[in-house]
Amino acid sequence: MVSVSLQDERLLYSGRIDDEDPQRPVFIFPASSLTFWFYGKKAVLEVENHRVFWDNYVGAWVDGKEKKWKLKAEGRTEIVLLDEEWEGEEGRKRHEVIFFKRQDCCHGFTLCSLQLSEGGYLLEGPLKPARRMEVYGDSVSAGEVSEAVDYVGKPDPEHEGEYSNSWYSYAWIAARKLGAELYDIAQGGIPLLNGTGWVGPTYPGMEFMWDKLHYHPGLGKVKEWDFSRFQPHLVLIAVGQNDSHPVDVMKEDAHGERARFWKKKYRELAENIRGKYPKAVILLATTILEHHRNWDLAIDEVCEALRRDGDERVFHFLYSRNGCGTPGHIRIPEAEEMAEELVRFIEGLSVNVWD
Image (cartoon, rainbow, N blue to C red):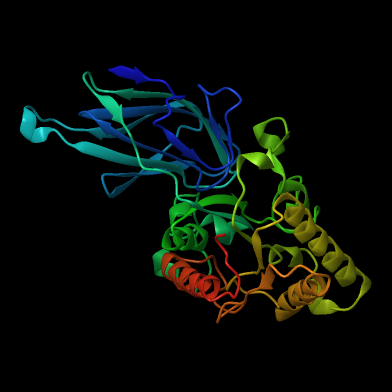
């Protein structure tokens, strides 16, 4: 086998990946990926898992075929991306690989090595898309339980992470339809505000997570993200659904003190992101996951206030079945539906999104 440097310029990384040690990049967020083209009979990755909960899986598309592997709870797992048997010139062909993180911070993993068969070598791969998109979201944006297609419109089945797949999140589907590179800053259960939502045991909110590279205390030291590394044209903020736990503040009193505080903090998040991306189009949204409509009314109120105060590149977006589509997570057909609506909205905006 031939070892490939994980710093090779022909390897195309995407996502908030910790590359402080470039020979041991750490994948943290869903939809983070490694793309490469190569010639050879065999390609093997070695991955070191850092488990927090659930079973942990990674995915890949190899020559147009989807694959997945369950990682060991601890230590290293060898992932055979491709192992072909052929001889002679008739077997010579280019192989294309997209290796990606299927799940959120139920785990992280370190990429330890890439090896090709004897005589194999990397080829010049595709260029990164000129368009760039970033999503700040929860489990729906991460594609959690998306593969449980027998449960469309139903509560989730019992599972240990095997149905979660960021490839089939509405976020990544929409990005592919738009021809955009995606950074998916998504975590299942996350609310806007710290101390609420479904992320345990420390309950960080998006107000804490949005500017982090490492944010989950179960996966090591918290690290800040360097925003100069990725400047998106389009940003989607899709949080607010999990803030109803443990108290549905907007349902109980949409104009009370706690509701006003939430709207204040939501505006702060939007303004903080705007401060990092002065020219980006920012969309404010939730999803078709069941929630009370007062959360969307609150977001609309914040959006209108931002526009009145001079931000003409912020918009509020609602899906046709917003908040009433499913009591469980979004399955693949529903994610496709959401992505289609989102793309139509983006393409219909009066501003030049990709300028």
